[in-house]
Image 1 (tube, helix red, strand yellow):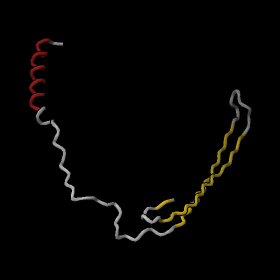
Image 2: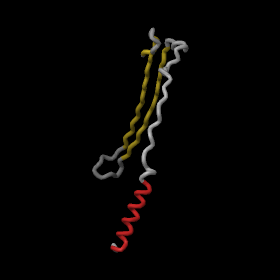
Image 3: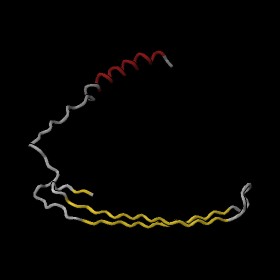
Length: 102
């Protein structure tokens, strides 16, 4: 590397750092203004009713494999069938405090 370019390069790097550093400082965090407690649940809303919820998911799969002329493997064909059954039954009731339990 040319030694004549090292000193001007370092001066330019230092100058750029001094010029950019004040612009890169973090802003102050915003002030939070609270007007009292905030409720997520509206007290005037009617409580949820008792509810029965169900779910049924079905699925199927199929696989076909053939080993003709594969060294070290027995020649043949494999067929695989499969199914999936996912069922759920949920009953939710409302407690006296308005919270829902499952």
